[in-house]
Image 1 (cartoon, helix red, strand yellow):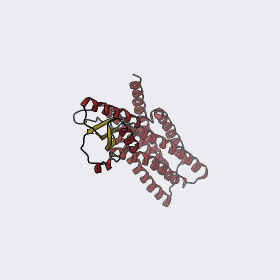
Image 2 (cartoon, one colour):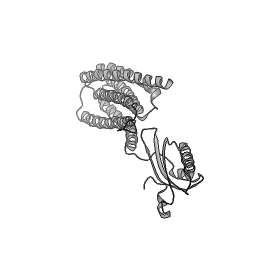
Image 3 (cartoon, helix red, strand yellow):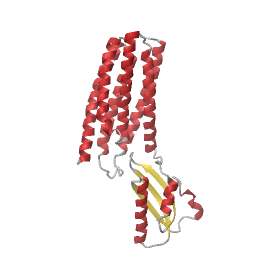
Image 4 (cartoon, helix red, strand yellow):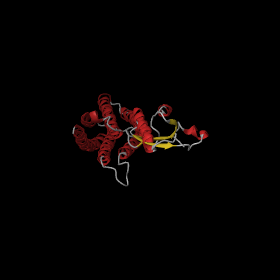
Length: 299
């Protein structure tokens, strides 16, 4: 009941943040065009990516709640990972675009109406702060929500920079501050996006999660009746769901004794964060020289 209510709160906050970011995007686009500020336009582009990120994240959460079926036997949990990958990839593209545009402004400076830029930047900052507040408590629930939250957090920081830049332009007339702020925003976005992009690619490519395979091997081989453990494979379906399969060489025994070994292996693997286990028992199947792969993720 509490978990369902918590999820409902997350979805409600996301919907409100989506509306808020689309609204601020429109305001900053108009303000950026009227003021001639690239930093404001870059912030509007970032806000638009925030809105799209939140929308995609919201849809991914709803899709991820669907049950497994005959076609998608693992369910739809990777929808969130796929969304995180798309969101972070978009952020990398946005960063590159901002750097190129900032370079053009360095080469060809343009006048900026700080009187328009400042109030619009302040409105954008307040809207971003509200969105960050709404999603803060949910930021660690999944890589999908975390990527959307980082979108909002980075945009809040960029809004702060735009406000400061507007003040400097208004007081000192230093228009070069505008492209400088744009580059700083782009670098920050790129840094934050890289980590999520890397993690989401690892999950989609079924890279082995951070498991101590040698420790797992020793733990499994300490189970009474297990001669050796090998043929390890580990992968993630979603951010927090780790699947693991292995072969255990045992002596010939009754089925009920074999089941005890399988149950014990599953219980011990829980200590390593494994959520789903497939154990294959073998009797005189692998030759001694073939057991060299027992602590690897291959073969």
